[in-house]
Amino acid sequence: MRMHEAVKSPINLSVDLAPGHKVGLPLAVPILLGCSAAGYGDSPDVVDASALGAVVTLPLAARAGGAPPRFAPVPGGVVMDSGCPAAVRAVLRHQAERWRRANPPVIAHVAGDSPADLAACAEALEEVREVAALEWRADSLPPDEAASTAARLRAASDKPLLVQVPLVGALAYAEALAGVADALVVGAPPQGTAWSAEEEGWVRGDVHGAGVFPLVLHALHDLREFPRPLVAFGGIQSPEQAVQALLAGASAVMLDIAICRAPELPSEALAAIIREVENRALDDVRQLVGREAR
Amino acid sequence: MPIRVAHAQVAECRVLEPGLLWLRLRAPDVAASLRPGQFIAVVDRERLEPYLPTPLFPTHLSQDDIGCLVQVGERERWLTTLSEGRAVQITGPLGNGFALNGKGRNLLVVSEGMDGLPLLPLVQEAAGRRLEISALTWSPFSRAGLLPPGLLPSSAEYRSAVGTEALAGALDETLRWADAVYAAGSPALYLALAEAIQRVRLRYARGFCQVLVRRAMACGLGVCGQCRVRLKRGSALVCTDGPVFDLRDVV
Image 1: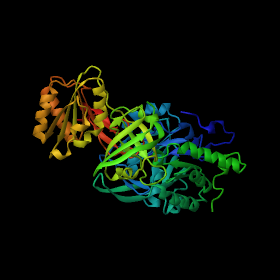
Image 2: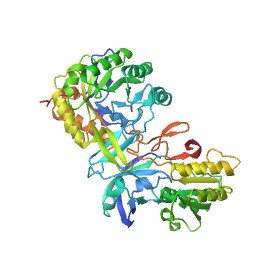
Image 3: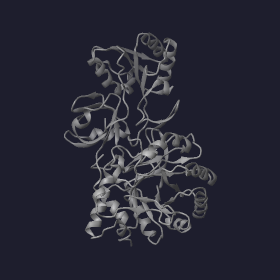
């Protein structure tokens, strides 16, 4: 795979998504592959890995469930039910060695039916050095419960914690999570339902697609005063949108299943970010963050 | 072979009959490296609908072109609107395809109706190597859905069976002399195949029977986890670990 031009850039492209954490979560570049775009921590062969700061795994849980994944295409996007999470220990057996060789770092997306389940999953990952951070989605709980659950996760793990908050009502979650999360992922994919002709049934799950991006920008603007890093996740289809997300306040962008349409998106997004920094006569990508926040 | 993302030009696009499309894509960068049973993912980057690339199993391979007989469902409907000369993006080769066992001269190819279309490149390759091919096409209910003999090389022996009893009988006959078996169909076919192999053969060795597992695929790249299936030895992703698996891992 060719090395991205970022490697040669004089601009500082690195960001720390957990500056308040004792170890931090330093990324070489502000582009991530999100949950459902990187398998269990594998960036696909067709993506330029040197344009990625980190990859997020599919959901991992202390115990595996039985429900199979399902999806339904919709105009401009897809509704995906990722099924039950995989058992963390089974994934570790298969992936730990690959993670050791992996570049970029891996962020484990943890899931569970209860705070105790989540804590058990986090504990299983605690000694895995290759897992740089944990990500958890909070949108199924009200803000106060989300905060207490995140606190339980923090107690179970020394790793930096990224929390996905819902795109609608993000501010309430941000206020509740301000003292607990190292960074917020903005946001958890909205929920939708679609008819699947292949499955001959309804699919309820995460909505991915072009229509999500305005919701992400809207939430980023709402969270402009949030004191910790924000990561834009959802609907990014073009390099220009990646730049817009940074200008709106995101410290990094997380790409989703759009990369299967556009495998060149990470490297082109990074190139666009570099151009934007240069055009504004800046020398550090962090100076771009929130520059056009309203 | 490395996976490539390439532009392909639509060389032919014809609806042969309701629900069946012939699509030929000119894509030398990908065509030459495709193996039977592997697939490509096709998307029109000019439009957002459909959003996900459409997985297609080639049925006719050449150095420059990828020919696909496509059973048109909801996800494939947009392909029928493509005009000749139109550019689309294809990603491939994707997945693990069939491997022609070097030792075997007598091949049994089992197709459940038109689900056996991805077997055609394998049959063409085997015919080119002058191997003996017996092609058994099966339908659980009626002759209407059987793979037409005209799609097979003239050197292949063609058999058909309708119903589960007829399938068992045909498998018992043909499995006796087969050195290798290749199949594409439903779990019901694979169960019948496994039972017949255990009934007829003294040994049921790994590698003897390769089957193509169909599951709706969203990304085709192994990243979204949507095509995860449970196998006997744990779970696997159809798009990257398969779609071709050893029957012993499936049943």
